[in-house]
Length: 277
Image (cartoon, rainbow, N blue to C red; front, side, top):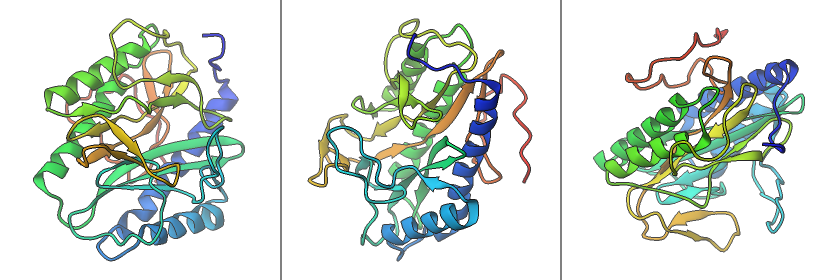
């Protein structure tokens, strides 16, 4: 617990702004995700919107954790069997592709981190179901967030829902604490046992971002040092929100006018923050 930063009221206010801005990048890019566009063009559009319209900094650009080469682009574009960290480039999107676009902006020193799945044209039934189940996994995990709950409760409900659907949970990557630092404690595993790991307290902020594979959970890393694919080449999906632990439950920080609504079975624990459309 000692190295988990509990956010102040000022931090939370800053994270609300950064989270909304991150989500608004995804709102902005949505109409451009269609057959014929390249992932590089999506990156350029997002970059220009962040820098020139929002006045935000794209956190991934030149991000360089120990042992990595600097990430060369402003967003991640993970298509089909890419699990995460797909580098935008000259890949042309075609009808039936599915893509995760992962955005993190920095505003006034605070990070807003969120991702969504997009269908390119008409998706297969498998792709649609995988995306829906993954979205439900994220929300089921979020629904467990309240003071006194444990991080293991989040991972457990995600793993149960994914495996019941016949899917698998990627274990090498997880959610993370976030604030003025892009990736900080705690690690938020998307599998596990209830009642284990850190206890949640008000003021914690972290991401819930399950990566769910249609096939087996094993991964393979590409030669670029970033791109992670499913080892068996099966489809993978991911959704991500940044969430605050409140006194009574949780608050989604990465929401905007275009944020998809929660699944019907999610009952909010507290009135969501008003959003100025």
